[in-house]
Image 1 (tube, helix red, strand yellow):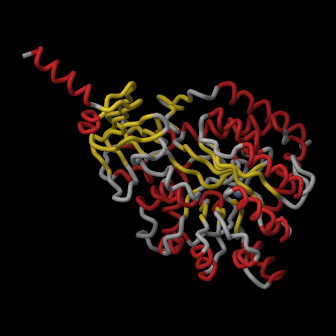
Image 2: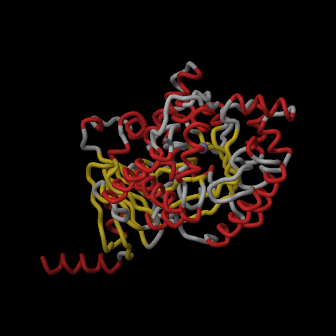
Image 3: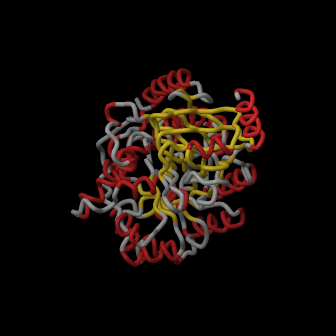
Length: 456
Ligand SMILES: [Zn+2]
C-alpha cells in the first residue's frame, strides 16, 4: 500500500507543471476582474511572471515548485503601486515643516538642493527611498527628480520597478542649465532604459507654471517619439489655477490640453483644483491621475474631487509625493487610509471611497493610471510576479471580518513581511535582501550633517 501511495505521488509530481515559487496564504487578494479573494489560497510563479492564483490545494496539485513561502496567517496581495513621489528627497526628510509652500521651497528646499544635490546624493537618497518603500509593500513607484539615470541605477540595484521621469524645469537645475539641456539629458535617458524589464523611463515637465509652452510641447513630442509616459504636476494649488486663469483665461487642464500636452500617455499628479469640464478632458484624453492625500493635507493644498473622479471611472492612483516636507514618508498604507477618510470628510458622506476602492487605487487602478494594467496591479496569470505578504498575527490585525477594511483601516506598512518584484524575492521576514539597511541609514545621517552645514 505504501509503495502504491508513493507511486501515485510520483505520478502526481511528474504530471505537475514546474514552477519557481509557490506562495501560500490565509487570504489571496487577487484584484482580478472578478475581485476574487481566495481563502487558503496560493500563487504559482515561474520566472518573472505569475502562472496561476487559486486555492492552495489546486495550486499544489497543478504545480511543483523549487521554492515555497508559506504564510498561513497572512494576506497575499499585489504589490502596491505609488503613482507620484520624489524618492531622493528622502535625504531632506523633515528639513522644514509646517510652512507655506513658497517659504518652504525658497528658504529651504531650493538652497538645500542647489548646494547638495549631486549624483551621489541622488544615489543614496534613492536607496533610502527604495528601502522604505520596499519594506512597506510598494513594488512600483513613480518618480520625478534630477539625475534620473542614477535613480534608475539605484532602483534596479534594489530590484524595484520604477516609472522614472527626469524633471524638466524652466530654470537652472542640479543637472541641466536650461530646459534644452534637460530635454537632451532626457532623450539619452529614454534611449538607455528603453525596453528595461524594471524601468519605464518617462519625461517629466515639472508643471505648467515652471515651463514655457514650447518646452511643454517639446516634452510631449519627445515622449511620443519614444513611446514614454509624460508625468507632470497639475492644479496642485489654488494659486496655480488663479495665476493660470489670469494669464491664459483658462484652467491649467484646459491650457495643457490646448497645447496638446495630453495627446499621449500622461500621469498628472494632484489634480486638486479641477472642475467638471477639466475632469471631462482628463477622461477623454485617458490621463492617469496621482492622488496625494497626505501631501494635499499637509500643505493645505485642498481636496481633490476623487469621489467624482471614481464615479467617472478615471484612472486614479495614489502617491505619497514628497518625503522632504509634504508627507514625510512613502507609506502607501497611510495613503489608502487617508484617501478614504479625506473623501468622507470632504463630501460629508462616509459611504464615499470605501475600503475596497482604496485598495483598488493602490493596485489595479494605479496600474491603469500608469498605463501598466496589462503587466501589474493584480495577481493574474501572465502578469509580472509583483506581490507582498502582510501579517495577520498582530493585535491590530485581529479579528478579521473583511480583508479590504483590514488593509485600509487597520494594517500598517510595518505589517508587510515579504515582497517580490518581477519574480525576485526582495524582502523576507521584513528584512530587505537587496539593500544594506544599516549602511543606508548611516549614510542618511551623514547627509543630514552636510545639508545642515550648507544652510548655515
Ligand atoms: Zn510632487
